[in-house]
Amino acid sequence: MASLQKNNILDNMVTSIIMLDQQMNVCYNNLAAEQLFKLSAKRMNGSQLSSLYHHLSSSKTLFEQVIATKQGFTDNLATLICLDRRSVTVDLSVTPLAQETSDNQQSEGVLLLEIRQVDQQQRISAEMQQITQQQLAKDLVKGLAHEIKNPLGGLRGAAQLLHRRLDDESKEYTQMIMEQADRLNNLVERLLGPNKHHQHAKHNIHQVLEKIVQLVSIDLPPHIIIKRDYDPSIPDITIDPEQIQQALLNIIQNAIQAVANRGEISIITRIANQMTINGKRHRLALIITIVDNGPGISDDLRQTLFYPMVTGRAEGTGLGLSIAQTLIGQHQGRIDFESSAGHTEFNITIPVIND
Image (cartoon, rainbow, N blue to C red):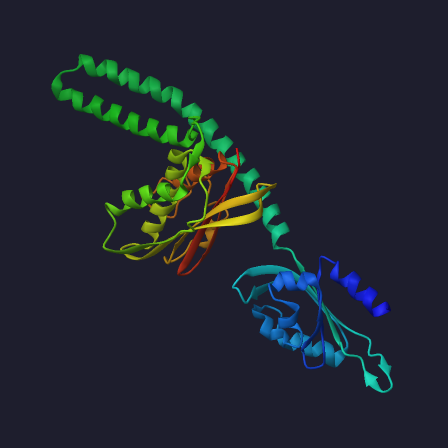
């Protein structure tokens, strides 16, 4: 009866609990562990611990040392890659169990594993910090842009008046001034960000994506391949198609530039349940993933990638991702990225709102 009560308590815990025997086989796991590994109790029970995952940053040697020395350990922010290729961050505690004997029989479990998933809390905290930093940067840039815009308009107006009074030979100089003033004005307008309020309506996201593919395919180098992996079950969602098209176009164009003249870009759509976006929980969310096999994003750009005027290319303006983040933000969504050599992945998450 006491054992049954103990198991009921463990099954109701949100922390994943696993007990191992002397051979590192699972002799007990609670429901939270099944949910973490996405494996059934039948699959887990009796299995070697190492067969439950692809990779765990805590080495097997550490577990063996606990058995040998009877001294536990804690590994905070350990990386666990599950069999379904999910990568999760966990706090892992391993504790030796007291070896009770009854009728000269050793107790079954010798190690107690407590695994607490912490990547969601980390992501939400990093997300809120990122939003604050980006807003501060945008406010600063917009303030500077407004200060530039007014005298720039006066400069162009004066050049235009002068242009009318000069002879044809001298007009090329005032024409040059006006052209450069217009170029700077366009840059300032982009810095100030989109200020149009469009009507959102239900649209098929795949039709929007196909328009983007058509646009970029016009000048696409022959050795760059664009692959689609669409989920046809995704319902129509409430969006402004022009804004979404511009945001995704900016990201895909960056991917094309990243792979240079040879590479592969994948566009993937999926639906996710119970997503937390910008601190708010949503029942359904659309995830658009854009993957390229370019060289990856350099470490010195990662923290400021979405800031205006930040770019890794000499000829770039650094506005594409900043504008994309603003446009997706107007849909209550967010943009995340992961990058390593040969694999850069942008995830655009937009809540599916039922009007």
